Length: 193
Image 1 (tube, rainbow, N blue to C red):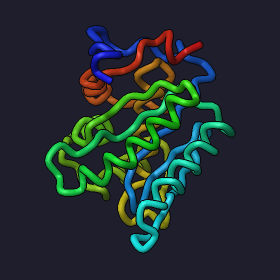
Image 2 (image 1 turned 90 degrees about the horizontal axis):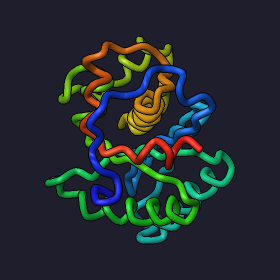
Image 3 (image 1 turned 120 degrees about the vertical axis):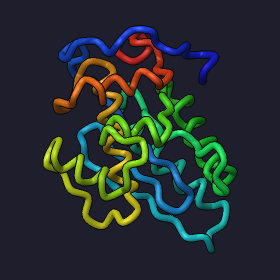
């Protein structure tokens, strides 16, 4: 990703420059993947450990269905944890989802958890409860049945994509919006067509 999409050197464009932008947010996990569809609805893809590697196919197939039905211009994905024990397992999910995105020609950006938390809450160590409270304050949304915050994270990932490409879903302080400059975003012309 980094070789394909160099780090941006300019701030996000002004609001309103990406009308009709369709972004999907993905908080990938083998057990509970959070998805925020372009229309803002969220859901979780839950799998059982007993199903082994077949879970990868389930996640791939459901994401592929969403990509076909919702035709997003961009996917924003929570990046892999760098030193976490589950990084290898999560990497397998990233692989099948990134392959699905490539098959559909959909560019993606990877956002590390600390950057997402700083964008949402102005605190790179914000808790899941903080993230949910910030979403409620920003847009009045709640995530019932989301104990791990997977849908909430996906919702914030979608919001980050909209914000960066000039179609913010709500107002945030400039300092929080500026946190998105750490992300290696696809070029605007690859997203807004």
